[in-house]
Image 1 (cartoon, rainbow, N blue to C red):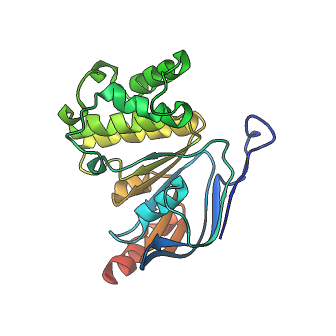
Image 2: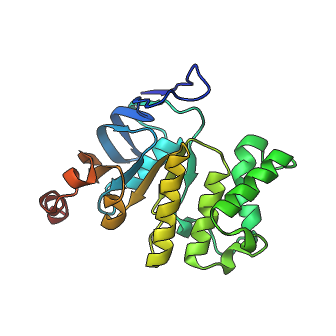
Image 3: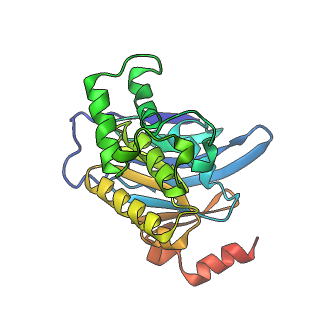
Length: 247
C-alpha cells in the first residue's frame, strides 16, 4: 500500500494544470472482515466537480472516507496532488440533533485542524468562519442551535464547516439528500462557485440529476469501478440499467 501527498513547488498551480487532484491505482479498502472497494483505478480531476454514483452499498461513502484519510486503504496506491489536507462533510444524519452546538460553533470546528479544539481562535480564524457563514447565507442563523434548523439550513452549516477548513479539496457525502428542490439548487450553485474559486469538489450522490450536473462521474457497483467519464457518457440508460438490474 502506498499513499503519497505531493506539495507543488509553486504556491499556486500553473494555469490549465492537467495534473489530477487525486489519483489511485489498484485501490482496495474496507472494514475488518468486510472488504468494500476492490481494485479501483481512477483519477479525480483538478478544479472540477466529480460525482460518485452507485446503488446503496456500492462503496461511495467508503471511497470518500479513503480520500478524506479517515479510512486507510488495505492495498493499492493513493496519490494526493493538492496543497492542503481534504475537507470532509459527512451526511447530516451522521451529526446528532441533540448536540448542544450553535451554528457558529459548528462552523468554528472547521478551524480545529489548523488551531486545535481547545485553543483560542485568532482574528484570521474568526474572519474565515464569518466568510463561510456569509458564503452559505446563514450568517443570521449563527446563534441558533444546530438541532433547530431545517434540513437545508443544517446542510449549509455543515458545508460552511468544510469551507472554513480552507482546503482545496472538498468531499461531501450525499449533501442534497432529503432536501427540497430550492435547497438542492442553492447547494449546487454554491459548489459550482467553489470550483470557480479554486476548489476541487467530490460528492457522493444517488441523485442522478445532481450527478448529471457534475463535470465527471465515477460509477461504482459492488465496490468496483463500473464507469468513469463525463455524465453524458457513463450515465446512459443502458449503463444504469445493467447496474440496477444486477442488484
